[in-house]
Structures are given as structure tokens and as C-alpha cells.
Image 1 (spheres, rainbow, N blue to C red):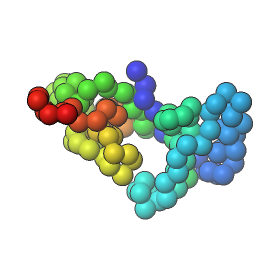
Image 2: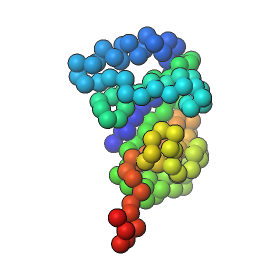
Image 3: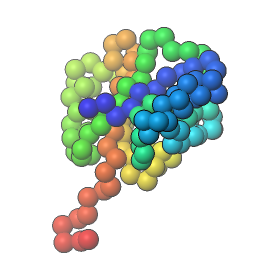
Length: 134
């Protein structure tokens, strides 16, 4: 299942205003990150609370490649999917691991497909407790 999509736009405030027009559906700006966090331009995340699914970033508008993230229910499944995709010809673009700058439980991995589209797998579940521990 798709977790989120990221688009780079030439006019971030204007694009955010268009996305904010979906407020009657419960779709609103839920998160913002400055360029220092995103590594490129300012970013705004829209969605239905509690999690954004459309990320808009300031910059040169997208042409291929486009980033797509798929949600995984468990970290082990994420790791297996990443390994299989790399064996199938994907290029590593970020090994599986925590990404706490997004949120406390964000665990993701990225690879590039043959056209350099950034394909991410992400798990939002907390680390499972060890057997016998709460």
C-alpha cells in the first residue's frame, strides 16, 4: 500500500494553498520541515490526521524520477522487501534503519529503480518489545 508521495513544486506556498483547499475532507497541513531537515528545500506534509501522505517540497518541479513510499506493517518485512528489490536490480539509496528526524518510530529504506525513481519502504510501528519485557 502506498504510504506517501513526494512532489517538488516551483511555488511551495501556492501549492500548499491548493492542497489546503481539501480541508473540508479532513485533509490539511500536518507537518513542516525546513531545508536543513529535508536536505533540499522547505517541505510541507498534507493528509488526514495523524499522518501526512502528500509531501510538497520547494524546488524545481518534478519530472521523472518521482519518489514513492510503500507502507510495511513490520520492520522484518521491510528488510526482506528491500533485500529482494536490491537482488532484482535496484540500487541502494538508504539502508534499512531508523529515521528519527521524521518521527520516533519511522523506520525506512530507499532504493533507486532502473529509471532512478526513489522507491522507499517504511514502517511506522514501534520496535517490538523483547519476549518477557513490556
